[in-house]
Image (cartoon, rainbow, N blue to C red):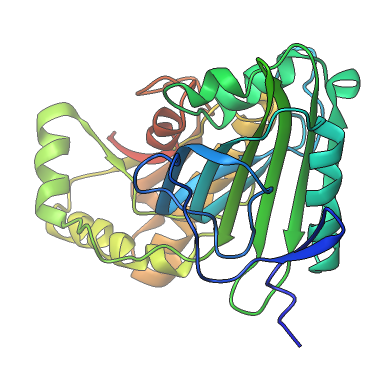
Length: 319
């Protein structure tokens, strides 16, 4: 019996099995392939393909609020594959959507959120694929539809890491367009970038502050993750080597979520960093003061994923 991780599509009265072997079509963009867990709708052509071993993804689980922001986003990190298919003419968005939905359910996926143009409004696809999880090039235009679209997000729990899928089937000109995003949650490979006490001291001497990107938290939480320890050790070393130095520990967030919520979250994260330095690295608590400023001091635009990643940081500021 095939593993449920191999998604089965009931199509045109037969079975099309998704396997680990990807069969590219002659018209597919160069270097593209189907995801090994999910087959393409028959007759579809890949027009856009992007795969990253580790990146972030904002999973929509709600409508847009009055400020056109997601009230219930889930932040995911892991391997992300994004594929835009041009589907064959003459197929409705409903037919394509139902085939994917059925296949996901048969494979054990839990449907987390669904919506249509009528439910979510035509600006949904613009917001989702331009600002929240931006596509590039022609892909961002073909998926934005004012005529008809159907969306879902789903989750498969598995021991080696959860898999999330988002699907948007829309009308792009004369044919349907399928946007398939697959997020395979996994820990980031660490140790690729090192932070040392000497470099921290030089930045503080030069500008009075230094941004730290090696302190990690789960989305919406304030517990410092274990992989942050190497950076915390260097901060402790910085303070040991510079006994006259006292620091403000300042938490920063992106603008996903409400300002009040992020203000409290950024303060709790700064408090958590101070607690780790004091309790585990023997730093005198009198030398540290924690503050949170939410998204009020960005270093990049919050309109892109790259910008939001730069804005999520902890800064050390000389007192």
